[in-house]
Image (tube, rainbow, N blue to C red):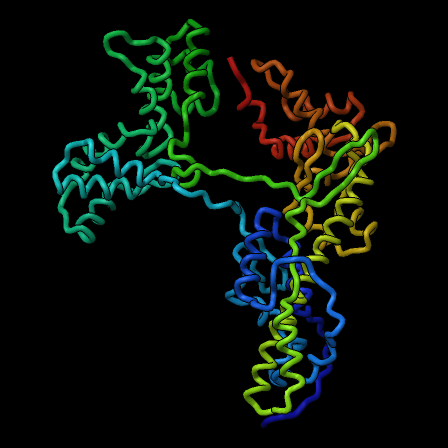
Length: 486
C-alpha cells in the first residue's frame, strides 16, 4: 500500500560560480594558460584583452530570458562536473576534489623505451620469425626496464596472438641478446640479474678486474646477505681478508642502476616549476607579487553584449528568438563567471601567501630554516577568515620564488615540537638536526633510533623514539642496519 509522507531536510549545494572558483584555485600557474585557452575556445563571449566598463548594459535584462526548465541557479554539483572537466581534477562522491598525481607538461619529440629497443632489434640480424619473438619480448618490458611476465606466458602469447610456435629455451636465447641492448641492465627479470648484466659489461676475461670479480661473486653467492648489509658474513663466505677490496666491490654495486628503463617508460621526465608568487627582500622589506601569468587579461565580448541588447529591443518574442537570447545569455553569464573566478583566485592566492609571509617573516629574511615557526593550515585559515580546505588547495599546488630558492607552500607548514625551555620549534628544524646527526655518524656503527632520540633530547628537543622513526622515514633515511658501511 502506497503512502504519502512529508519529510523536511536541509542540504547545501555549491553554485556553479563556486565550483568554477574551486577548480581554478587548484590549477597551478603552469596549467592556467591552458585552462584559459580552453575557456576561450568553448565560449565566444569571452575575449582576451582588458575589460572595459559598459555603462549601457543592464544585468537585470538577463532575468527575463532563458529556459525555465534549465535554471543555472538550481544546477546540482554533479551536473556541473561532467566529462568536460579539465584534466587533473575530478569530483569524488563525497563532494571533495581529488587531484591526479604526477602532473607534467608534455614534451615534444620524445622517444619511448619501447621505440629505442625496437630500433636495436634491427641490429641483431634475426629472421622474420625471430624478429616477431624479439618484439614480443621487448613489448613485455615494463617502464622500469624489467620483464616480470613469465616466459611460459610469453610463449602462449606468441602462439595465440602471433601464431608463432616457440619454447622457453628459444626465448631465453633471444632474451640474452636483448639484454645486451642499451641501456645496460635492460630486460632483466629481477634486481640480481639486472646488476649482474651491468657487471658483465665491465668484465674482461683477458684482464679481469678483481673488484668486478668480487662484486659478481657477492651478487651470485651472497645476494641476500648483501641486501641486509651483513658484510661480515659475506667476507667469511667468500674467504675475503682484504677489507679494501670488499669495500670497493660493494661501492661498485651500489653505483649500478637498479632501474635501467627509468620510471616512465624510458621517457625523460621534465618538470617545469613556475612559481605562483615572487617574494623579494628590499632592504628588510618583503615585497610580494603574484606571477603575471596568474592575471590574464580577459573581458566579456562587446559584440555579444550588443547582440543581447539588440535581441532585447526586438519586437519579436517568438520561441526561436527566445532560444537564441537564452544561448547568448548563457554565454555572457559563463564569461562573466569565469572572469570573476579568475579575479577571486588572484585575491585568495595573495591573501593566503601574504599571511604565510607574515607568519614566517624571519625565515623569509634570510632563508634560515631554524627560524621556521610551527604553522598548520588552521593558523592561516583563521587569520584570513577562510575555510581550511581553501588554504589546503592553495598550499598543495603553489610555490613561491625567493632570493634563496623556489619553495612549495607545503614546505612552510609543519608541526610544533616542545623544547626543554618550553618553546615550540618547527618539526622541520628537528628533521634538519636529525639529518645532521645521521650525516655525522660513524657509518661502521650507525646510530639506532634510540640513540638518535637521546642525542636529540641532549640538544633540548623533547621527542619520542617513534617520532624519531617517523621523521627518519619522512627524510627517506633507512634504519641503522641498512646505513652500515665498511
